[in-house]
Amino acid sequence: MLSGNASRRVRDLQVYVGAGKHRLHFTRYHSTRFVNATQHLGVGGNWRHNYQWELAGDGENSVDVYYPTGTKRTFTPFSGSEWRGGELFVAGRMLRG
Image 1: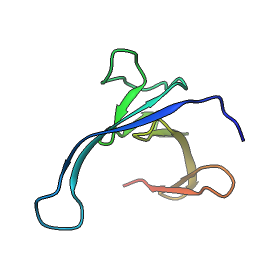
Image 2: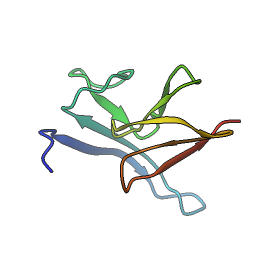
Image 3: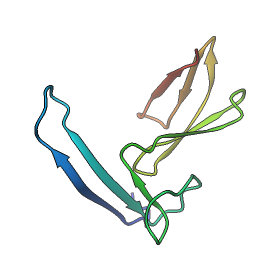
Image 4: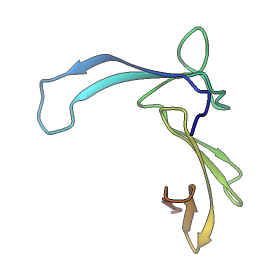
């Protein structure tokens, strides 16, 4: 499926020293698709980074999760404290505490 979106991933920093399997890195993402979320990086807008996760919504009927890549997924109440969101074949799950 074609979306007309152009995206770019730039890894600015990667640190190989330290313990554990998760290395420190800082990656920027750019998308030409409009993202209705807070913009923190870049002059041209739509730049995001790998530590930029955002939640928006009323918390009662729906919550939008903005991922570092600019992808947005809307979660809605499912059962009790469980919320679900996503498209067919792409399931997402979030628990409300």
